[in-house]
Image (cartoon, rainbow, N blue to C red; front, side, top):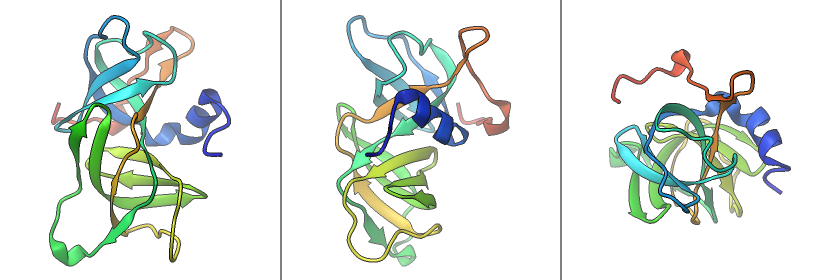
Amino acid sequence: MIEDSPEAFIARWREHAATVELFPHTEGSPLLEARAGQTLVQLFERTGPYLGRPGRAQVIIHPVTESVERVSDEEDAQPGIEVTGVSRFDVLARVIAVEGRVAVMDAGVPLVVGVLQHEGAPLVPGELVRFSNRPPAHGFVLVDERRGATRGREDHHDDSM
């Protein structure tokens, strides 16, 4: 099991939330549209409908993949996300941390990736990997419980937005 509950997942992985720009919700859709770095991604909102308000927000981006492929650093590829469909994308990322079947990765924005199957040696921080997510990618919007407002964090400020 990758998560016990949305609240437990947020409590464990909150420090790896990405600063994103959320766009207005499409009525009736559970998907959030967010600009993460230079990429527009769609995320299945796991924290309840309408917590994600348009504007800057902190969101734990949680794709799940069947497996990852190690990539040689000599390929001179830049980490990033390439959207290939609705809530579907291909990712090239550097592993930051690993805990069980979850790996924190840097793809230009932080991702908390669930890896369902892994063959060979365990992932190691610093490795470059490639994967395709199993849609939908999940999004956990961080909310300031005292005010009920979407929480922004200045320590992860991104001037590219």
